[in-house]
Image (cartoon, rainbow, N blue to C red; front, side, top):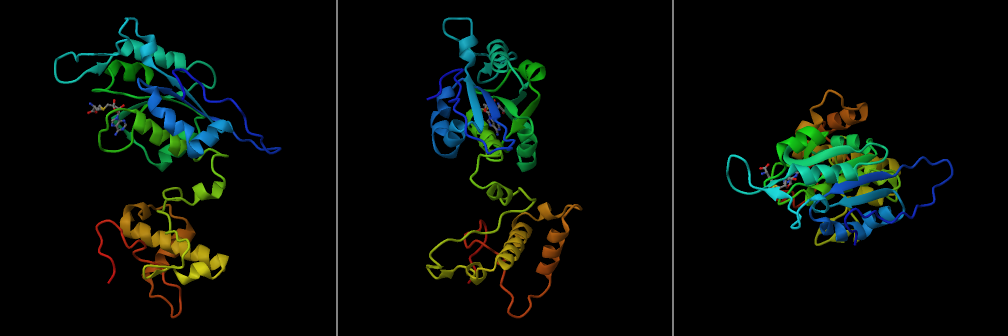
Length: 288
Ligand code: SAM
């Protein structure tokens, strides 16, 4: 388990000659560092740490609180419920975690921050080093945000107990775009939101499951036809569930063509694109 101010294993992966893979570094400031134990010691995150694709440090503000109770919260000025995170121990923890180069981009996780989406994830990836500050209780003293944060980020319009789960969401979304994180870089490139589309539906064996067959084109072995079907399926799914994603003036010619093809009647014998790709799409009745 990673302890306060612990660094993940420093073992580096062997890089192919000429490769320019970078290490994405995450410095976390959290009152509950042990929450990250399982997250960082399992599956792809653990592998990425072991191979040096990502690096993670954990710093606990309690280690910077001057009193013997290691107090990091206090009552709000002006009254009201709950406790507010004190600025002093958090500021010291942020400064301790942020030493060295490159200078980290400091993010305070708050429900009122900029909503995290894939474009923001890509933007953060370019920063190379992120210092992520997890709130608790009623949140941060505003002066901490004003003085020390570069940006506030929210993972969505709902409130969870603390910044640790949002930090995992943010970290994993950035980490999986880091070159070397995924076995095949292409798998990240094809995912939902990456190309302004929701992803096409996936199928695996068996070819028939409880009366539902895999679309025949996927069994055909024709790579070009499969690619065209997938693009059309992704466009159909996006149009159905998130039409605003296709409202942009900056659609690629391939996307425009796929969109136009959807509104044309299908040619006889053409492979059917699922207008409703998942039988369990939320809020929709299964086709009869
Ligand atoms: N009183 C705060 C408010 O209404 O905005 C909510 C505090 S919340 C219980 C405690 C901490 O959890 C926050 O300081 C923040 O770090 C984190 N948090 C909760 N929901 C979040 C969200 N949607 N996005 C990012 N962080 C969140």
